[in-house]
Image: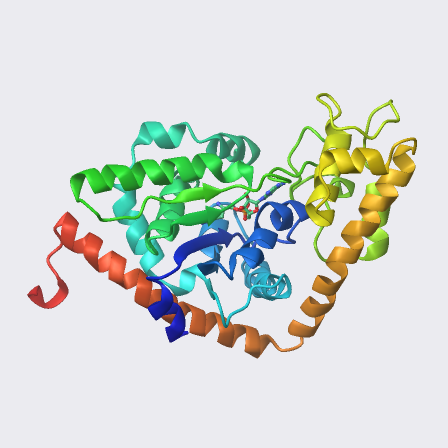
Length: 341
Ligand code: TYM
C-alpha cells in the first residue's frame, strides 16, 4: 500500500465510486467499472463504494450492509486489484463527510437546483425529498477533491456532477490558490449510456420496473441470452447504426464495447442476417464475458473476512491522503487547529 502513496507523484490520480444499491448492471460495468479495471496500469487508482450517497434514498439497513460487502466482491471480481489500487468503503473515511460540509458552504442553492439527477430523483421519491439528496453533488465533489484526482471515469449520466465538481474546485482555488486539482471526466466513447433493453430511450438502471430491460452482472448465461432475445428493436431488419434505431444502436454499442469491433465491422458481420442472429450473438458475447466475473464473485463471497480486510487496509491508506487535503482546507478556510497550532 505504501507504494501507492509514494508513487502518487509520478502517475496521475484516477478516482471513481459506485453506490451499493443492489445489483450492478451492464450499464455500470461498461460505463464505469470495466474502464476502472483497465486504467489501473496507467494511473494511481482510488475506488470507493459510496454508501454515504446511498442513504439519500431510504435503504433497509441489513440490505445496505449486505449490498456494500457484495459490491466490494463484485469490484474485485471485475478486476480491481487491491495490490495496485485503493479500494474502500466511503463511510470508513470520515474525511468525506467533513469535506462535504465545507464544500456545501461554497456551493450555491441555484446550481444544486439545476441538477437533473436531483430533479429526477425528487420526482421518483416524492415522499422523501431530503436535504442529502439536494446536496449530493457536494459530497461527490468531496470524494473527488479529497484525493486531488486528475481523472474521474464515469458514465455519461454523471457528467453534470463532474461539471459542478469542477466549478466548486475552481471557485475555491480562486479564493485559496492551488487548493484543489481540477478533475477531468473520463467518459468512454462506446457504451457511455447503456439503455434499457425493453425501453431503449431510457437508461439501463437497477430500478427499471421491467427486469427484462436490465442485465445484472451476476445474471446467469440463460438469463442474459433470454433478455437479449427479447430486446426491443424496430420493424426493419437491418443491423445498421442509424438515428432513430435506438434499440439496435444500443445493442451495437454493447457488442462493440465487448468485441472491440467498430460499427462498420459489425454492420458487415451481420449483413443479410436478421435481428434474431444479431441479438443471439450479442447475448452470447455478453454472457461469455460476464461468466468469469460471476465465478470469481462466488469464490470471493466464501471469505467475507478477506473482503473486510481489503476494505480496512484501503480505508487506512485512503485516510492518509484524505486528511492531508482536509487539513489544508481547514487551514485555508480559517479553522483554528486542534491544540492551537
Ligand atoms: P452509480 O452508482 O449510479 O453508478 C456507478 C457508475 O456507473 C455508471 N452508469 C452507467 N454508465 C453507462 N450506462 C448506464 N446505463 C449507467 N448506469 C450507471 C455511472 O455513470 C457511474 O459512473 N454519483 C455516482 C457515484 C459517486 C461517484 C463519486 C462517482 C459518488 N461519488 C465520485 C465518481 C466520483 C453514482 O451514483 O453512480
